[in-house]
Figure 1 (cartoon, rainbow, N blue to C red):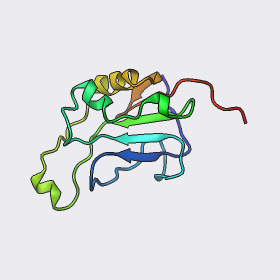
Figure 2 (cartoon, rainbow, N blue to C red):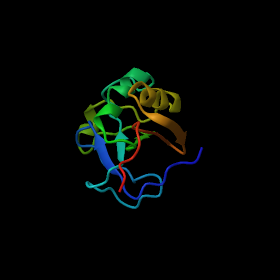
Figure 3 (cartoon, rainbow, N blue to C red):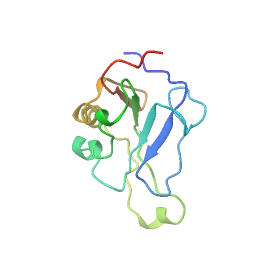
Figure 4 (cartoon, rainbow, N blue to C red):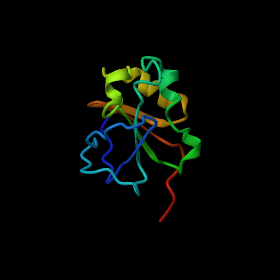
Length: 129
C-alpha cells in the first residue's frame, strides 16, 4: 500500500502543552486550514497498547466530510516544559496494530500504515468540484 501524500495536514491532539512534531508524509509545515488531519496521541492519558484507548482519541469518521484523510502518528505526545518532570508519559511508539484497529473501530476505510504513521479515510465519495 502506498502512503497518501496530502498537500497539507492539520495537527490535532488532546495533549496539553505538547510540542508539535515534524509533519509526516512529506508535508513541510502544519496548517490550520488543511482538510486532512494528523492526530498526535496523548501518551499520558491511557494505555496506548490498547486499540480502544487509541480509538477514544480519534474523531469518529462519521463526523468528517467524505474522504477526509486522518493520520495517526506513531509516537505519542510528550509534555512540554516543566510538566515533563512530573507527568508520566509513554514515549515508546504506539503499536501499528493498535492504531489501525482504532481507525477501523471509529469507522475509517482504506486503512494502512507505513513509516511511523497509520491512516484511514472517512467513507464516501469526495464532493465533486
